[in-house]
Image (cartoon, rainbow, N blue to C red; front, side, top):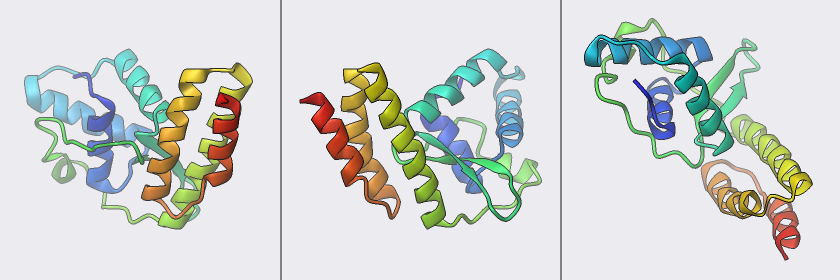
Length: 157
């Protein structure tokens, strides 16, 4: 099973958020149910990295238990992969309720880091992409990215 960013977001969204090992287990269960095969670890690693880079997934460290969760992010269009709809019944993981303000703040910090990195590299394509992502983040969480967006547009000019 090679999951897309939106499928990864769909799986974590079934639970509100999953730790990395929980996501791997959920995908293993879905892959086994689909065709008896397993998940390609290298492909999964790349898919998660790409999803995080594109903000389809975001990392959120829960202050209540210090566990880092992967959560469906602002650019995701979560879709549950075939044979994953029963995963919540298979895994012993309760649905998680997340503090949207804290999740938004963590994403705002991650976004600012991405802006800094893109400016440092002079990566025009990434800068343009991040301008678009800034609007998605603001629609998704209670944050204001006006100053970051201004830095991006000034860098592009």
